[in-house]
Image (tube, rainbow, N blue to C red):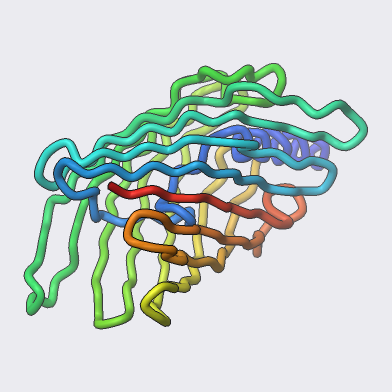
Length: 252
């Protein structure tokens, strides 16, 4: 009986992961503390998904908008068109959960300072998706993270993590942490790799560890291609056998 309950909990964990918009610094899961400059915009058109044993789901098409509303303050929204394709059943498509947030940089070091940038980026996920069709979590969720970043010439490293408030039947609150190393390999191309870990978000569920590799290609000053792919290293069959993210970013 216990293995059956454990498998059910793992599947519920999967649904929570694939139905939610990415809480991340595109194209990665890990985020950074650096906000959009005052009065400037970042707009992403993106698609993202995760495949596990017997199911594929994520964001078929999504829009992310970030705005520099004040010095060191960025306002954030993601509006996804979610999808879920369970094996042997019809694909479900519809609005996903809306993500709202505000990134604030608390510490801004000078070029010669040894200490990193530090910021907070609280997120609120509004249950606008249909949970019965596995297109949303069905409950209001919140993420309270702290992020750090340090630059060394052509190298950038950032990461951190925080606490997820995750209500709902069979769910439990959980922790997320991740770290990334990125290199500006040419004037137009930056490549990076991240490792992340999440504690169990369902009662009786398992922890999830994974990695992504990806990059950002700059077509010009205003348009960029973002891409990443990865998989789980722990509980991969029920959490992340393969995942992807692809976006076009406009900055102005």
